[in-house]
Length: 163
Image 1 (cartoon, rainbow, N blue to C red):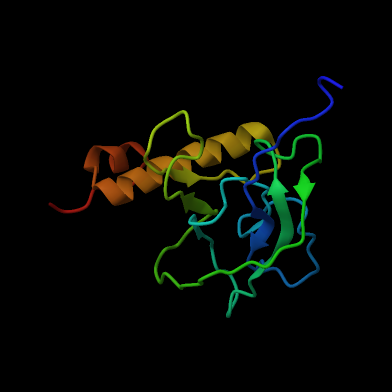
Image 2: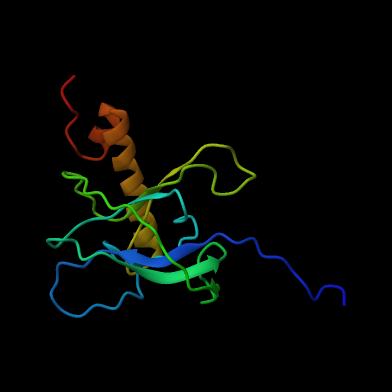
């Protein structure tokens, strides 16, 4: 029957991944938070380097909610969920002082853009406008700190480093 079959390219990833919040009460992982949670970002796949803030001793890292495939975000609450084994390498980056998660991809996130990877900052906030503002501010901070752009730091209200 025409139109009844389809193909979905698989790109396995963990939908929830992160560290514990500093506040001692119980926390749901469903909303993403500043230390991560249920991000459901399909580009957090094999080869991606994820940087997470650490707020408690030992970080109390957790990972789960594995997906075989998903579109750009779980907008309708659907994805192709699948049990899987996850192999990770964890490193502590001292002095990173991250406010929210960010990640670097090893190559293109889609095949139609280019052959290079990407630096990505995230915005975690109660509303879309605040989240977008936080993501952009995080990228400006990242570019300023990694590209040594004094004028950039000055615009963000930070002192430029000494030459």
